[in-house]
Picture 1 (cartoon, helix red, strand yellow):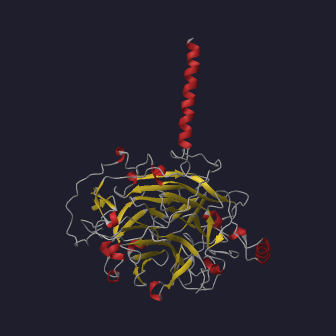
Picture 2 (cartoon, one colour):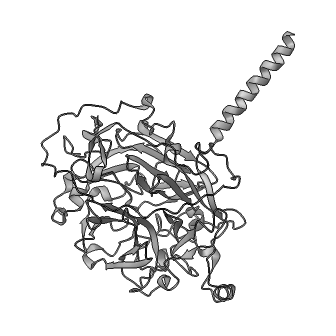
Length: 545
């Protein structure tokens, strides 16, 4: 009898161990689309065959680097690093392609993707952004090629599309004094203020070490140059991804995210150089002011390092203060809640996959608080050779609330941090904050078309979908609120004082006013680097233009 009981007990223990192992291996992101190599939606098969024969379409030369979601469309950008890229700004019709390996449709059409047609088309696009007013912001770098093959048939230009009419409503060419001979810009952040005309876009000059502000209302831009926080950290230029060791030591300011609007009417911009493990911050009150380009050094704030192996190229922040960022050395996506101190103990991992998330190149949060992640194995594409019999490019999605559940970023679990009602410490002398806006400051987004889909069994495990079916948004981070802000938007009155950094934070976007003063190139995502004939490193050369 005792022997039989022992067998039963051993069996129960084994089942429990298996359940623990399965839970540790479970992934939250669900694979939605995947490709061995990218395909494009040509008007007909004959034209596709002609493009293949002429070299206008070379499938193995296409690498997706940016994505954005709006309604029933998922936008994907494909830079013209090599020959044979028929379109750089594309989208997936999610009503017609629920999952699988869909063809990419040029946006808004084929003609608008003609390389070198500067006034009418997009030559090369990297990161893109849809704003709260239904506009798609695209920075055209005007370049063709990568590394020492780079040509500049067109100037840098800001292109904005109305997603309701699918027409370009503005093209603005960056003036000469906004760039320098080393300029390379691959990232964009968009800031909407009290209405849709009160809009700014910010562009990170990765290799020219600057930050450019563009005002929609003024149709004018200006450059913040040579702040030391824009430069790479000389100790953080060594990278290890997918078994490849390489150096991106010249990579400066890259990833950017914007907090929700704070009580003073401005946002906080967070940014990091690519060759760095540290995050920096500045109020958009500074970035929106052309007169502050030369005298704002002390308005920028240095935060802590994220920890080892913490290079990042893409970041985004939700409207309740949760920042997501890619961790390219770790094949992972990380998180931080902006009401917490910026230190490693308050950083979490929302998902990791050593196969599917090799170089998670872009991370976005859409209007329904669904997260979208694009992975593309970029260093393998640049340094070595992709295996086109294998899946190389993937797009994942999951509700934000599900991703941060049971992580340090989930403030619903009080075990991870202070409660959401902390008294505001006495602040240093500050300039008076402008009053909160009281009028409606942005129209509602167009109604998102209903898209019901049932994913086929994914190639990787993931946590069960939220109650109510696949794709439903579960509850996300919430904080107690009792102040009404712009257009009825609730502004949390929950503050945390980060004594280590000497900063005041609020959950709707940290205050970043310190109580003390904080103490050539090439082109990649690290959009640079071209494989050298030698196996030991990357090309080091100067980007022309």
